[in-house]
Length: 330
Image 1 (cartoon, rainbow, N blue to C red):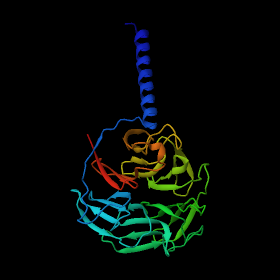
Image 2: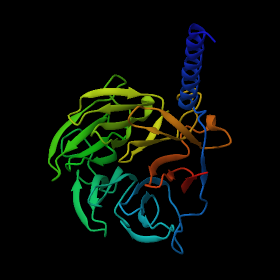
Image 3: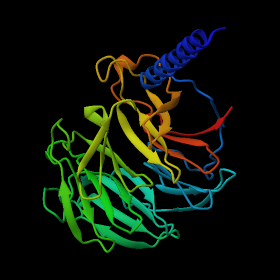
Image 4: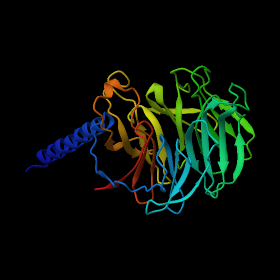
């Protein structure tokens, strides 16, 4: 073979590889990614007499245990590696359990997204033993002020201790924003309003921070992930992860996103499930599908909270189906 023919052959092969990669990326984005996971059925074992409520959030402890936030009793549960509950607390404290994160010191942060009987609409910080350490917001009060929330969906804690709250889950209060507090709970700033432009939100349903300190916001009703620096400067937006209800990013920037709402009316071309990918380049590499009889008749079903542990196992918190699932690589 001549040098020119060899060069042309190499070019053709490279082009075919590029095309194949592009097709695979599009397929992954639109819900046709491979599923290399299998469910570890019945892994989580509840104590006798307990039953799941809507399971909304999950986050790993540093030793590999899993913290779970659900709308049952007690609402905050810690599971060890065998799936046994080793700690529980929070009974009677919340109106609507919603977001959760575990900070670098092992403290458990949760949000209460609704109001009833003078309770709710706050962010709580607990020690790993369940001692209440800090409360943000005013119980039972909603508004646009700097000391109140309007449905805090989720919370994330930066490496320096700064606190970020995704606020905007109370329907009749048009507040959609990210609020930033110092590590001691003092208000620093807020950004965003209801809308669909860059830096605007329509239900900022979940929030996470990558290894570079960037803030990822699951802007659910706008069917996109928005990315900011910690001063609220808009950096980018990604739509390949579907209609995001939950987002989790580990220390290696593995990123998983829960999509509980996509159908032909809401985000057509995408299917519901857990998308696995990377916060570094935005690639989607796998999809754990959520199967249901007719997604067109249900605008919100399946997994909303997600996490991934150090071994690569994926966890899904399902609200409407009231199930907590663990998935392992096949």
